[in-house]
Length: 121
Image (cartoon, rainbow, N blue to C red; front, side, top):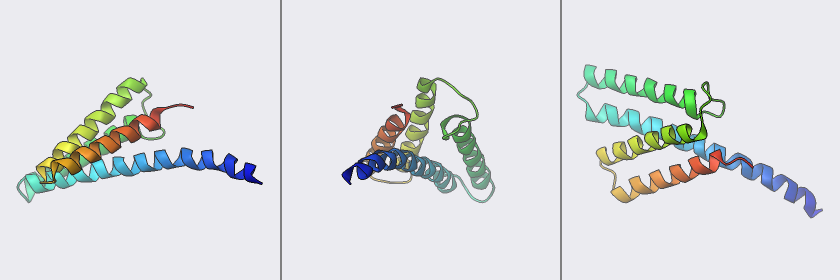
């Protein structure tokens, strides 16, 4: 009777990391957009730059980092792109006035999730 629980546990664990990774990617995109809105003068420069940054981040995610990316690249290139997105988000968090410990913790958790998400079993 304990065997079905053991068989379903790895399947559930395999779904947690991609879900958390997706949540962190969404948080990265939202934080970058909020930073652009807060940093640039409103209405026109801020809105245009925020929209451009939002489109660029979503396009970057869809091309390389989504669960089914449009462009298949080497995992090292995808990892580099993910690290650049995380670094930009950490810089945006620091620009928004977040404490550096929170920004670094966010970056570390996002990087670990990115690494765990690319491991193939």
